[in-house]
Amino acid sequence: MDLFSPGIGLIFWQTVTFVVVLFLLSRYAWKPILNALKEREQSIENSLKQAEKARDEMQLLQAGNEKLLDEARLERDTILKSAQKTAHEIREEAKAKADAEFNKRLEEARRAIETEKQAAVAEIKKQIASMSVEIAETLLRKELEDKTKQEELVSNLIKELKIN
Image (cartoon, rainbow, N blue to C red; front, top):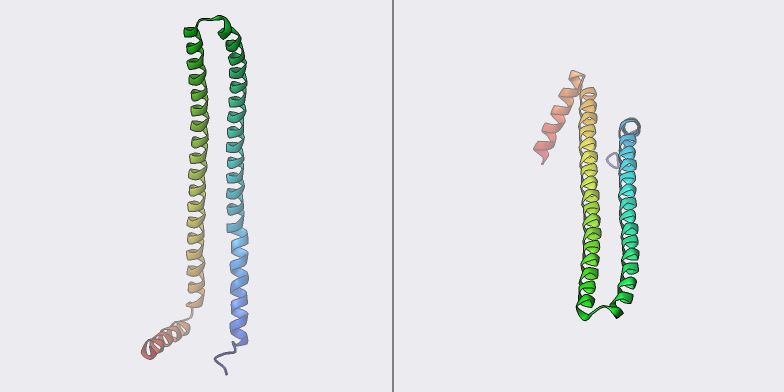
């Protein structure tokens, strides 16, 4: 039955270790992670505002184009058939340019957002890995300070290897 019930010492040290890790994470990891996420959120909001601004500019351009088109329609009735064809070509070209510009800006914003997101995720992973190694190193140093503990650990590992 002793194999299934942990000892009080084990529970105590696991609790102490958990509290230390929780403290270290809250002190050194969560704040930078939350700051990075806030910066990323602001970056995304700025990108969305820029995209919205580009869309509004495009709507203004389209409103201006519509006004020009109305004037062209009035003139079209009085102008020869060749002028009618030219006005139509100009309208289509301006619309294509406005659509192309909007799509270009939108795609650039999407690429920038994705790049920033990947950079933030990579940085967070790097920080977490570094902190994990530091914590493990500190715990191993404290655990193996005493020579008797080192010998116990080695003999336990040898026993486990022979059993397996």
